[in-house]
Figure (cartoon, rainbow, N blue to C red):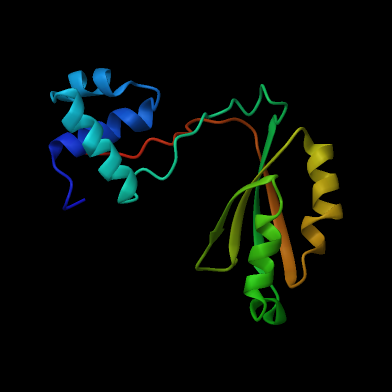
Length: 155
């Protein structure tokens, strides 16, 4: 963040907590007038610091009460087709996140489902059929201690 000053960091911190704040209210909270604040927001968007403005939905209220972390190991042949694996995973709306790992497994997936039975259907009908997979280890999350989209920004 070397090209961000204290005003930029304050703006980003406030927006990541509530992107519905008006530029007038945001300007007041960071100590700028409205026009310079609005210009800074536009610059932060154009430079890619702000990727999107979204509504965060309540997973449980949406009927997705089960969260699963699946560790995926590819076969030697599967590693040769990494792009195909990645494309297949991107097509599954149940997979919220997919991370490439260093270590004994190749990927970590965060998956949501209505319940364990729904995950079982997704697992057998879709995930386990992705070519190149050697092994999948699924872990069901019991409860959530902390989940945030807020990055730590020092002012």
